[in-house]
Length: 318
Image 1 (spheres, one colour):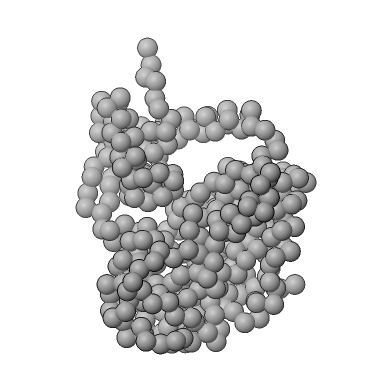
Image 2: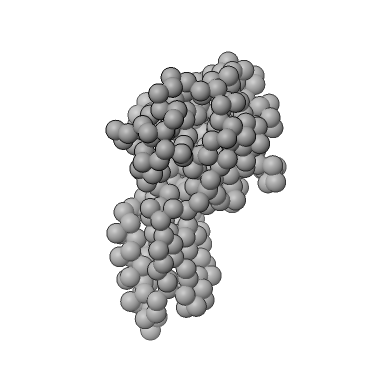
């Protein structure tokens, strides 16, 4: 008789393997780190084997875990296909980057204005982005950067301009820039910004590499033992006199008494968020309404005053 595996525990195991940390896996799954740990412990108990070696600041698969992982992915893929086979075709699956990021805030506003919208929000993470999800067909629509220098979008994914998320500089109150009311983009040269979410092979990491090339700022993507959740990033920056980081204008930054937010001007670097959708979703009534809202509220005048990577600019000019 086979084991009755808990799919939520299997999903937690795959997320921890992909993210390399329990905290980051918890953020992707939208649950607490304690809940992730309990699910992994339950799965290890069922299998009678340890799946992970716990290390300071990270984890690694054991030999048993490495053997189990491809089967776990297969189980989840089968379950997702089964759900998709019976899912109401009127529900639109929309991927966003996380609960605090600008795209999730945009969608919360949209859903408040359209309470009858049949939309399922899917939270993604730094290592598996919204862009990945729409390309792979796991969602119908995503908010993500269209351009990635080494990974062009496939022909069956369409893009429309959605939002330019203006970046501010976040520094601790002991940092030399803490008293400034603004900085210019050229002032970022010789600074070091800790942006651990850019340490993954993704369009986000590509954006920060292009920003570094443009203004000279060093992007540090080290995975600190405290984790790479937004609150942990803010804590570290608040206590540093050398590191800075970025916060988006449309992103909800965790409040901290020792953090100073400084506008960047001449020009303002902005993350170019596009609405991406699968060709098969074209004509979906939920997509039509969302598309009209996003494109209708997009401010095309802003692009003339901001820095975005040059390949992104054409999409955002009307």
